Length: 480
Image (cartoon, rainbow, N blue to C red; front, side, top):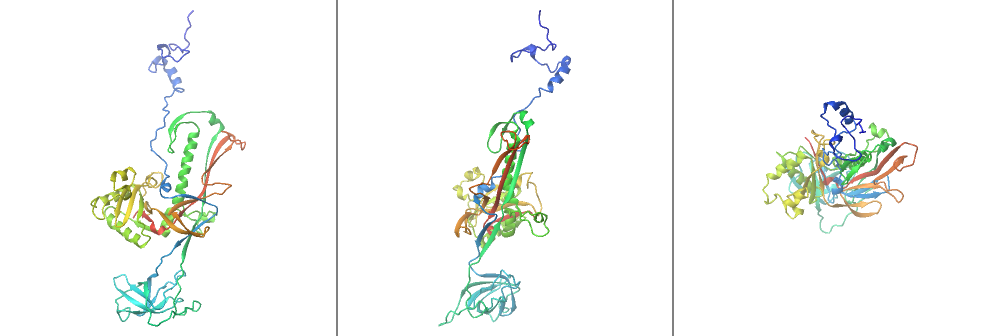
């Protein structure tokens, strides 16, 4: 007796064989109900994930320009040298022969100009005169001068506030070095100029994140083929989300020290709540560095030359890196296209053996202007739509100029001068605990047996801050 099929024309087989009798005919109207039922359990699934946003990670900027170093304290403190020579801006002239080098009575501005010093006095309109200092009072900030080529300051054509800087001294024959009484501000002696170090500090913040999957979901396994941003590829199931949480957290480690702000004292909400914050890259440049607003292709070369003139007054670091958003990068390209290749002050590729192909293959465009070398690249963080991409207006961040190499600073702990990258991250670490990047499992699923929670929790933690040394050599590009 022949077996009568239980499912009409569909006869299941014991082996995976492609036969006419076990083929599901989706267009068969007679089997429509059966087909609809089957589609609930036999969907057409693409197991490979579609990477519609490409590489979504944003970190990597600090790895290119800085370093990471451990620390053990709640605060990192460093000192930076002040200028070697003595100069005063925005000085007033109470009389034709006197100058007040501290008209605002600021506590951090001291008169250290000695009698018999020779100074240059200049205004903002091109007039200047060289003078001999005949009297100086450190208490009031008043110096009395005798111009070399004019009867007084007014006769020298000076207008408004003036700048004063010392270029030497002149004494009579047979003179002795006079003593100076700092306690009484005696005005007939030489002032001893002690070096003053400018001290800065920053605070580390604790950054945390967590991924949770309950025990039931771990039993329902569905495979997804992935190629993740950290370079791994293959099949993942419920830990696919854990992988993305980890990548997101690694981005936060960089974003936190780039965007960080110190909590203001007083009425600021974060400060009232007991949060201290940390000073990030943008905040440090805005406070201690240089800000260029409204850089465009139309005025690009003129604006850029203004930046160079300002760099001349600062550390004059020869090699610098430009990390820009798309619009500002194109503005630089347009600016460079106006400069003839190979001409003096024109386009060159410096570190790349003057090979354009080599520079472009590394993702940088290098050029030289004046005595400076610049290496330009796009900064994905400023282009990504989920962060600062598309931002316009005065508050928009369009790029940064960062000096290459290292700076010399005085280390308070070591008690000596050391060389450090201009940008570097300090993270908390000791022999007992390394808080650079911690991760651990809690719960009762996935190998963790730490609590009665029917879930697996993947915890992430880091404690770190950014040190921006020599911020006077940095430039922040902002929108107009």
